[in-house]
Length: 97
Image 1 (tube, one colour):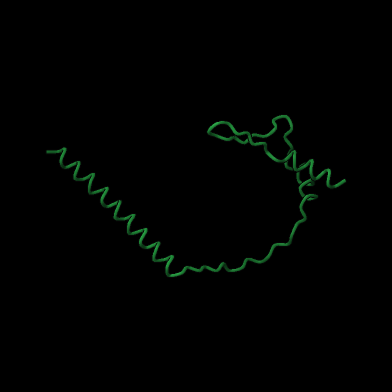
Image 2: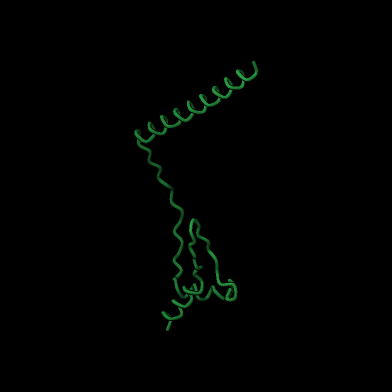
């Protein structure tokens, strides 16, 4: 019995996705909107509530090769920006003559 209600709730609460050429939009049933208060008991039946774990410290791990690649990428980016700026300045000066 609970499985039937669970599937019914999942089908009602899941938005429908229609795909058209070049874009996809998400829309819901306009006539069958459920309020969040009435949907909450159904959701609690579907998924048991798990106790929250205390926040653990995130471990950051960067290897030397990753940092090296990142530095080189930033150097290239800065060089491109500088050349673009110099090219624009040169073009501006040549038009002013």
